[in-house]
Image (tube, rainbow, N blue to C red; front, side, top):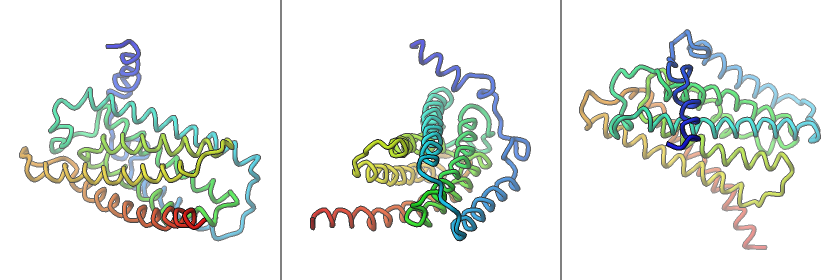
Length: 272
């Protein structure tokens, strides 16, 4: 194996903190149901209060550097999570069947669940996205139901990945993190004042929609293996139920968003 890959595998898979990680309900920081509930209610409450009460917007000379640092942080986190989980998949999934369908009662421990935990925490960090929108002058135009719904509910889904040891979450994590590398690269360039073609914004949405279609395909494989793969089914089927409904709802909302924004833009371009 190439020395660089060996180094990456050690720091992203075989490091003792990662290799021996275990999600313990109520003991691991952020693992209690009270923490989850309080976090989401606080996010929704603060978003409502701040968006419905006039607060002075922050000038771009202050807000843009903060936004750039935030986007760079999430870009790097997303890249590291995608790489770490990918290496963990190759190291800790002995067969294709095990990769698609975790055995029943799989303990939430090891590198795959470590990256699921980091991914869960990163979704809470993404709440800052909403705050930056509210503090900007474009809040009315950009703060949508889709944005708030997505940010609030995705934390529940990630929590259930860990709580139920949900099958097939690693591939969904890698897919989502990879899309976020593209998305936060675009946001970073915008924050730095780099002139980005309008097509790039549409490409980000295209990637997100493609991600939801692929996630539905992944969830369908879990469903098939749970009822036809033998061995007592797949681990985390109740988490699978929530993820399936949530991802389907996101797909519907994103397609509606796409049709209202990019179809209209295309029509205007043709008229012009």
